[in-house]
Length: 376
Image 1 (tube, rainbow, N blue to C red):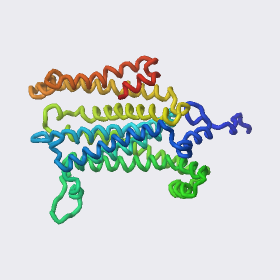
Image 2: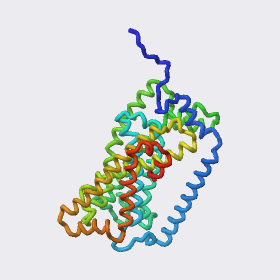
Image 3: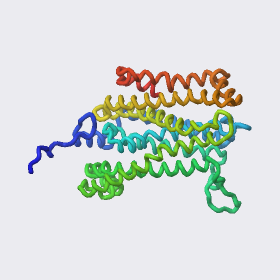
Image 4: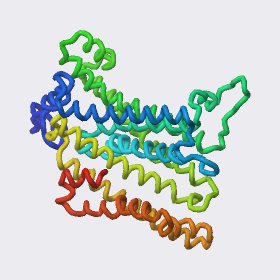
């Protein structure tokens, strides 16, 4: 039986329709050539910000976490806000790589590796804040459920302990998922490099990959299994993070809308961060033919949808406060919208809900400058 399929034609891997050898060249070029001035500028800015962060942490360790505004009864302040922020940023990578993979959304292929890497670094950064906010991170070993000479034991009914297990599981699965997806690329770099040291390193981490049918079969199977593991983690991790607030009895926090609200907000902010990183990376490394405008436009549509979900959650918070008939609950939300910090609340609503409605217009969805500003 004859077939009309021409197997000599390479399949389209990225929506920009470059061939496989063009993709390999684009991936390998930054590692095989001297860094451009644009890369050095970006590295300098990042290094400066890292140095400032290290100095600020040093001051915090020396003078104490009272520098952050912590007092009684305000026990968390900046560290818990940063923890929730960075965990949320890390959700977009797994969403792009796992959920969109399960739904066979091919436009994810050009951006999945960036998103996965950003997820790992974001979750690692988030994991620092529970240690830092103790004020004495060198005693953090007592936070683990291990027998010790002081007979200290963790409180497993505390949401902070749930965070430890949720975030560590999420980091482990995300790292394995990212590494498995990276193996074919490492093998490609191994075959291209002429340096013996680099070839040895790439050979170790590519695990003997030879691009054979057998290897691809096992690769696709384990990638699908890990995508199945990672998908519920996207929902469960930020749900557990929301329990830091929802299981308390404080008015304004003790509400069942927090889990879906936090998940939608995490996907929303995570996509915005991935997009901003992609806009910079595609310009520095000349990847416009791989990270196309069509891909960025689809990301804007996801941000539009999740932004409306977040806006719905904002509105439902006020409705629940009114419907409950609890005067303390009503006071919290009225004070939030019309009290001393009303300016901060309405800036948040404007940035998260109102400005994202501009993505209804195609010209703005495909405008690099506009999407970068809205993403920020």
